[in-house]
Image 1: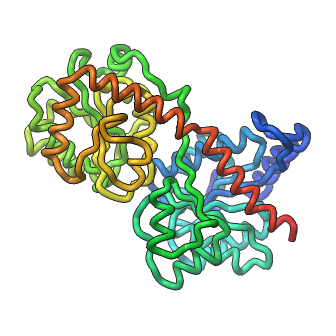
Image 2 (image 1 turned 90 degrees about the vertical axis):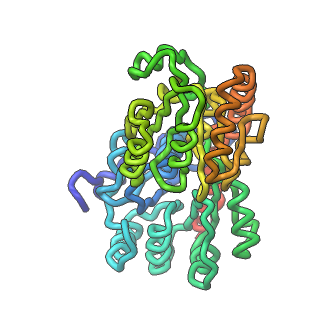
Image 3 (image 1 turned 30 degrees about the vertical axis):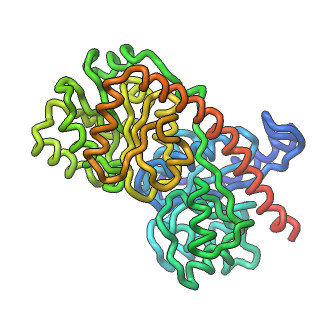
Length: 403
């Protein structure tokens, strides 16, 4: 265990205090009826930072507020490790960043000492490690596998064992991914539940655009087109840069918030197209709300792997007009010409046309933005996500507790 991680003696008092508080209260805050407190463990092998990791920590914080004990297991050098510490979420550093016998052994020892009620895995690597470690235990905790992206799941007997035998329940972040697992992989529908990522509609809300630009040092009068997303190839940033280069408004600016593996390639593209003075790339931002409030139009031109993206929902809640693509679960969040303009993926010309349409029509921007906020508030609330996940965790934990 690395320096700074929580030991068995550190974690147990946190768990017991949370259980005691819930038992004394007899129910969880904001919920009707008695609920028992659980110890929920989240595992994450990923070293990166994006919507998946943010959802884990937001969900963990919400469950802690409801009286549950939560522990996050991840590699010491993962970004989620430092962020969990910053938020005060119990986190333990374990070597689970890649598939290895050591990772299985370490998880086996940890799980045998702490006996959580349910364990929620999030990436392929930690799902395999947890499944094999739990199998080695005489009474391993039930495993819930959250599938965050729409990438096809391999169709082979080993992966089928992981999803159908080792996993008690599968959670997808959208209905499209659930349907994919049922139709393409033949998985049991009753054991797959779509739980879209919830976003706090009271926090993400429209604000003073001029004040946001002043605080961030952005040009006060320019038209700002922007994206908030990890700089991965499939987010489609390069098509956005290409589309932006052809806009008729020479005073427009493109704001690309985020960091990631494509940063160097994007900066080279911007320089090669002579856009260095018109493209603003501030990197990763711990606080994205002011950046969203500063924009005139939000764009998410993804061409693969999406569930229902958090950044899209955040932009909708900030009442921004959106241009996006029909990829993954995106169409579960928006409808073309009602709450967004939807264009073909990897098509810079179509993207440019949609941007020109929005930038030239203030009434259309207002209409799409208002509809987007209303839809996001109605269907993607944070409490609704917690309610569904809590129900799944309680249902999966009940058979294990009865044993």
